[in-house]
Image 1 (cartoon, rainbow, N blue to C red):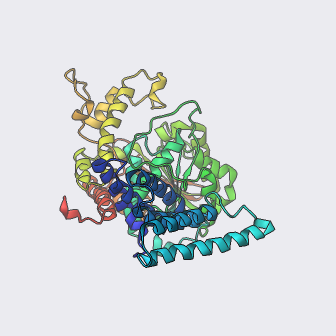
Image 2 (image 1 turned 45 degrees about the vertical axis):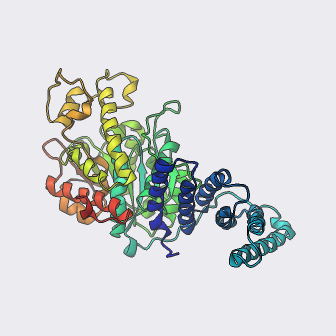
Image 3 (image 1 turned 90 degrees about the vertical axis):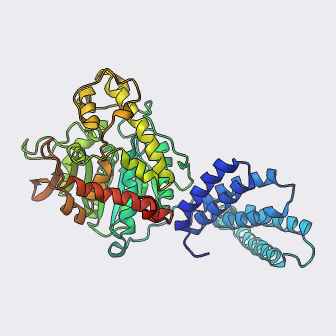
Length: 514
């Protein structure tokens, strides 16, 4: 009613989960929460998601209430309205007709008259439209029911909404990809960055798209489109893990052709205005350059990469190192760096050394979980599981395929130095490795901050490589040169951005749990 359906989606998602826990999935209270969520989705133009929610709602109500109960009428009216929006006019007419029938069975003449009149008006209007379509030889049946349409991109208002960014992510592999989207949410509210597409890569890329869609919905970015990218250089018969989340959702609005989404997003922006943020395998960025080189050079002003390069003094050009994202598809990583330098598109590389220079204590995850936001609580739980899984990989032989392209340098000693601040493995470690962790590294949230000039100049130091007259920067070149100006200041910055995203999406005050 207030025209703020986008703000309502995070709240409605939480209401659905809370009622599921309290009442179960067959209770009318749960059905009502689904109906509210459907209204929010419908308000932001995601009618197919609204349709799915209402179908679940009605399925519950048909069992919970006696046949043709009056309580079903409002949900049928909402369902008919949503079906009309999806283009399924025939089914919408059937739904409104049923609503009229139930009304007549439950109410005497004059009771709930406005409800009945609205149903009859909708029924008559739908019947007229269907007759017109059926009488047109050129569109006899095609317009009566159709699949999700591609909504055209509106040219982004850079001055008002911030720099347009396309994100390539392997969300679900570890929590920092998801937290990167959380930071992006806060920066979007500040009108600094405007994510225009999120592409999931690394097999199973479809499951990652489901998680990305659910995360974006839960943190107030339901209007940001999600596309399915490639397997990220991983063999098609190999599926890497994707951690679970109750809010992960298979949505009809997810674009199966992720690269098509990228091309349409770039076509919508002014020349040299977009940033490409790659916090995953570089396979899809390579595809973008190979297939649409002119579009890439015309529209992209900078490519930000979470990865690493070999020594800046080694040769005249930047060469990617053995960082995990580079290692997923080595040929793609080499191609992207080579073409960016040849085409004069600046790059900004954030290395693992930068992440090591600004670790977080595990207690921060406890603090953000106090917001009671579903993403925050899930991230805290998954972090423990991820650390245990990483430990189980580093203790394997470097040639063991179960390491899943983890660089050979990531061994037991590396793990102890990185997460525990020690170089010795204790024989007394009998419990979960998580209880011994003293620090965690936030790779991808730092890469998001690097996209914003104000944060970049305040919190990062970098080395520069000039290639063909264009600057390419690298943040973090060694253990001694992490590229972090002030660790505590940067930590406070992104911790605040985490908390802001979670609390504002739930309309809470930060002071209520800090």
